Image (cartoon, rainbow, N blue to C red; front, side, top):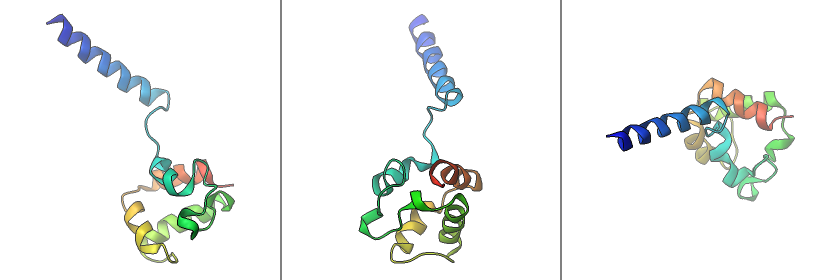
Length: 99
């Protein structure tokens, strides 16, 4: 009985700690494989280097992918990748990567 309660309490503490210290996954995590840790890579050798884009340009691009009003050769791929993003997550990405 005590072992089960200890495990539940430990799990709850870990979740609260990760949320309160920012250790929870952020919106950019799924972008790292193609764009790099800091947006420094040309994804699949075709995209812009997003670290060179302003925050406003990043927001415009991500919302454009979602609304089908933006994109080049990687448009279809990017639409699928960003379709689930909220406005808050889009702004989080722009703040993290944009200049």
